[in-house]
Length: 279
Image 1: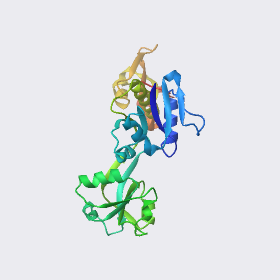
Image 2: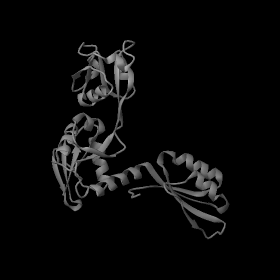
Image 3: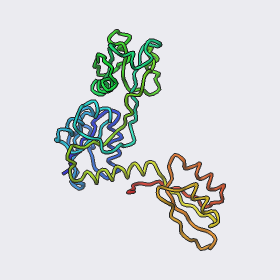
């Protein structure tokens, strides 16, 4: 039975659970449950703190898990990322008092507050910067104002929270993170099936299926507008000069693509959501 670690709370939890549900797995219904068996799919779910998942998977106690790339790298675990899951994206940056720190080299000998000492420490060491790391569990933005640190390293979205604390972003990006599927050193049976299912969910979320009819003479131009993942399916119609086309397109471009197809001369343009996929 495949043992899967799932975040029990936080920003990763809800989306991870929903993704597994869409992939056909049956997880917990009660948020107090810590272990749930899904015998039909031959898996067992273990609901853990996101920060602990890489440690459990790396030790071999659990086979695979869903966590953040940042948490994986910060843990120092031997677990390996096997797939990005296309949610919970975040960017890690340095920030310091406005106008005082402008380059990574300015951190030499400085105190840097962060909730990710492993991740940040490895980054600074790789760049040859010797700084003192101050580990905080959260709200690192206040560390400079309170005199605990000279700079901070944390997740940055718009930077608005940092600016309210009199801080500005500087230096290179530390890490582009997102939710990832991680595995122990020896992938267990069932991991390939899990990965295919999760990839199918990502495809279903990113694409829609478009059907349309158009004159054969316009087919080449229509295919240029909708090349699809591999290539469109083209079928003859009762009207000999017309064909039916079925193709997958990016969900985000649906209406622009429909407009372009209609202007080209396509008709009966229909869009269908994809529930699941195997590409």
